[in-house]
Amino acid sequence: MCGEEIHGQQIGPDSVYIRNFAQIYKTKLSVDENMNDSIMQSENWVDRKHSAIQYRGKDLKRAKIFSCKNRDVDPETGIPLEIESYEYTGRTARIMLKHVPFREEPVVHNLVQGLQAHLEYKFEDDSAMRKAVINHCIVTRYVDEEDNIGFHQDKIRTMTPNSPIWIFSTLGSERREMHFANLKKNKVLGKLVMEPGSLLVLGPQTNATMTHSIVSGKDEVLLKRTSPVGTRISMVFRDIAVTWNEQDCVKKVTASIQSSIRNRAKKNHENNLKRRRKTIEKAFAEQLESPPKQRVKNVSNLIMKKVRKDYHTTKSKEWQKAQTHQDQVMKFFNPILVDADGNNKPKCYKELVDLDTQYEKRLQDWKTGK
Image (tube, rainbow, N blue to C red; front, side):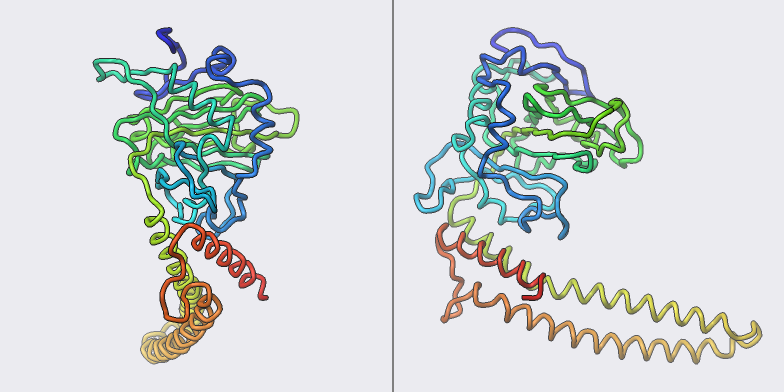
């Protein structure tokens, strides 16, 4: 940090945890004790119930803010004209529309400026010090002991090769435990208390050989709590190598929405078919058990033929229902996807945001049966 060597706790092969990082370098980082309250008041939070950040159709156990490098923005929507694309498991293209430039989040902006201006690092194989490069940030809010993120590796496909991940816990945040495990996620290798103002520098080798998790309150080991768990806010900074422009977003977000609509009914009825198959197989097993043992061999073939016939008849009917249901879904959503000439509506950010808003509303209406 400005020529000053920082010592911290070694984690894995190339990671380090620095406790009280923000308290020590408060002036250089332009942070204060009110940073937690300031970012809590942001209007850019994406709620955990929003379908764009749901994981496999389920609400996340955390809310998020997505921000990226300062650039010119679209004057109508405020969306950056280029957006760093960090791809992770469960991410939808629609989340790109939720990104804001760093300057729209003053706490994030000040911290990025401070880290890039003053922080240098070097891995074991590096011959010289490297400046911290940050062009993407995800802010995450955990509100109680139930909020957590399971064991995972950060995805690196769109990151700059061999770059670290900077995980910062804001001043005023609740302390939470981070656990590290092997790649099979069945053996915990280490535990760490993420203190307010701390910085974890997650190196690429550690991320490649270990998984990590912010565990729920019931799984904590180090913290002996005597009061309810409060809110923790973390900021994860990355150097992303891939960007999307406006046309990339228009094309990929529209395709994502169309695909979601087509798959909604299909997956629902595939699950119904699987449940029906299990019911038939269970009935078959019960019929086999009912006759005396010496009769099983004689009747099993007859029962099997009947079960197969029933199953294929049921399957045919269920697929017909699936197609009908899929047609209903497409009819419900189709007005927001194509115009009178059959062309995709969105051609710019403004039209794309309108499409995304309509889709989210219709999706909620569909779920509630309106």
